[in-house]
Amino acid sequence: MFWNNVLGWLGAFLILFAYFLLIHKNLTSRSRMYQWMNIIGSIFLATNTLILKSYPSFLTNIIWFIIGLYGMFHIIKHRKSLKLKKKWIKKK
Image (cartoon, rainbow, N blue to C red):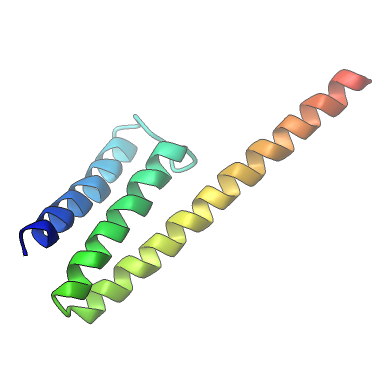
């Protein structure tokens, strides 16, 4: 049970700290760090809540995880398209 609690506290800290950094403009919602903190934090909290059989919280954290992956996908997609545009402009 000790490691389950550690994961839960770390997950909560990561998600809340990411939000704190977002509010104070140290991170943006389009930064990889912000998305990784949410992805990892939600996995830790989902693990904690699954072990505790708190299914509504588990589902909420799985959805938060999916949202984080969706955000990360768009960050990567956007950066790749910017690189392609820069290469295309240099060729002209």
